[in-house]
Image 1: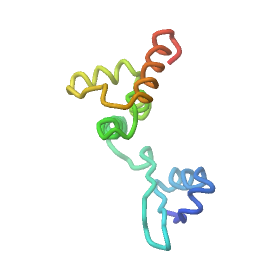
Image 2: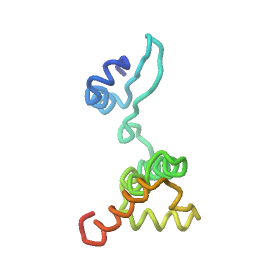
Image 3: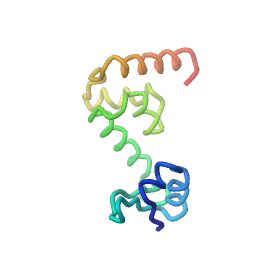
Image 4: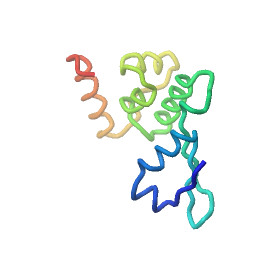
Length: 116
């Protein structure tokens, strides 16, 4: 595992991501103290990486960190399938601001017209 400073992460994030993909993880430090761990999900040997991606997507969406369209991308699922999962889990979709709603509507329109 390699360590990178916050400055290195800001100036060249792809270097940190490549290191994480090579070694499964990369450490990010601030003032020489560990601050964050960048983890390559595909390299961890998890029994079901797709479930981890879906869980992350659900968690990020429920916390309001990302829109439903972004969450579907994180989960690597088509938007309609992700919406079905949200409905099955009784998770409301319309708890964002106007910008999130516009992004979600645009993604739904693209899907309806065969673009996503």
